[in-house]
Length: 436
Ligand code: 3MF
Ligand code: MG
Image (cartoon, rainbow, N blue to C red; front, side):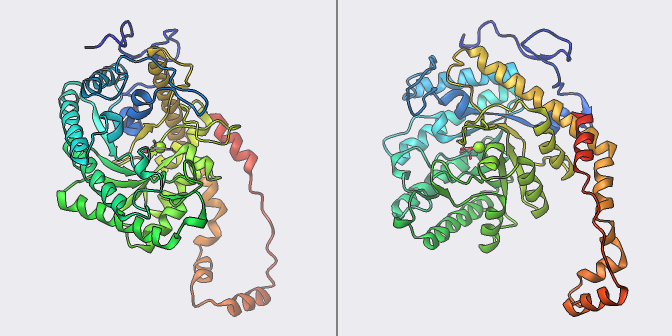
């Protein structure tokens, strides 16, 4: 036991009327919504890196937090950090967490030492997972912080870095499998470039595909039953990242024949950076059959960079869960809070309350989305808009046999003069507002 969260009670559901800060107002894990427990719909996960490894630095200043597990360079402190992390998981009662190797153990002098430390700390996790019932949503390798990765991991011009990255991924996949992880994530923060002047795009694409294929092969070799997920992001830290957005990732998977093996972990902030909405990225992934999981953290709308803030906008989050529910909900995926408290939020209570608020926002949003789906008006109006395509004639127009000449003949013979119809956007927005 640490005393890091001393005085903070276990968070329970007390309903919307409570004035207790340390309570859920909307997230009642056992509430049944659309036939499923809320906990099983939302599948919340805490991100180890932001909550326990990040020290509050920014480009203009160093750490602002003061934690008993600093400096994070000994295994003793790694264990202390794990103690505090699992104490927070027990207080929040969220079912999952996620981690990178670099979040949980100090880097060793050699690969062998780093892997031995990862094995040691994840054995410690296994005991704590058993005690608290917390599960692993996904594991991942940090292939972007260490200087060896400054020019990329799989896409590095140096094959030795490629080998080092592969060995590191192997260790992280082994640890994820050992802990019963439900997914394994790859985010290519430095798989891209800073200047095209020194970059061979086509080689780097082949290298990235080669590594992803090795990941898929190793998954099957060890019998890992989870899902391999790629997390799209358009830039930052690279000027251009190859996994730009869902459409780009799908094109890449298709090109290298990996589209049935890999899905996507979509982050709200990354969607915005790519010039899309979160719900656009989710709907597109679902329609392509590659929707996997989400990172639920927003950006500041004025700053233009990845600020990784906790969600607090119910109407926005509702539209995301609407697409997720429409696609059948999560299978192995979940809602990971890849979010950090602001660097002035230095109290342990800030960490807890950030998650409490975010879980409530997501619960409200999911309930609103489920009610919208159940009501069915939105789907009915959408279906009506396309009804012409469900007719015999609609199907005939799409068929390859009906060429451009046939379309020409049809318009002339029938004297067609199609009349515009309202898209009814404001009516639909009003409808959504009735639920949020
Ligand atoms: C960066 C991110 C990453 C990924 C993580 C797992 C550090 O913007 O979102 O967090 O989520 O690397 O893939
Ligand atoms: Mg993320």
